[in-house]
Amino acid sequence: MSDVIIYHNPRCSKSRQTLALLEEYGVTPSIVYYLKTPPDADTLQGLLASLGMKASELIRSKDALYKELDLAEKTLTESQWLEVLVAHPQLMERPIVVRGDKAVLGRPPENVLALIDD
Image 1 (cartoon, rainbow, N blue to C red):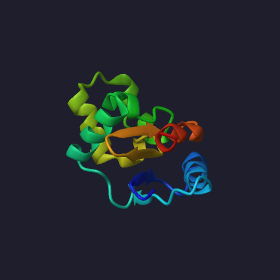
Image 2 (image 1 turned 135 degrees about the vertical axis):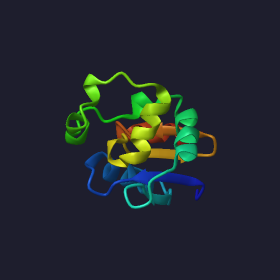
Image 3 (image 1 turned 90 degrees about the vertical axis):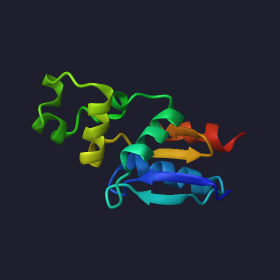
């Protein structure tokens, strides 16, 4: 199954666990190292649509950068949250695994099984 894409951060334990789980099930995903090649706004909007999430729900609110930018104190629109994710991809929850028009967040890693079991 090569039509699977993982938006991966090798420094993140959940991302590593999700990748290992995919490989354990015989899936060799295409790997997007999103910190090196951040998704643009259009790509992010597509991911959010596949996830069924809003940009504000994909933000890592416990990240130090979130606090540095005082994002908790701000009231932002969805398009502004999208701009934050484009400008600061490290704030994106990870990993995101995509297959076709479906996507899941690998938190917990077992969430990806829904994509490969069908």
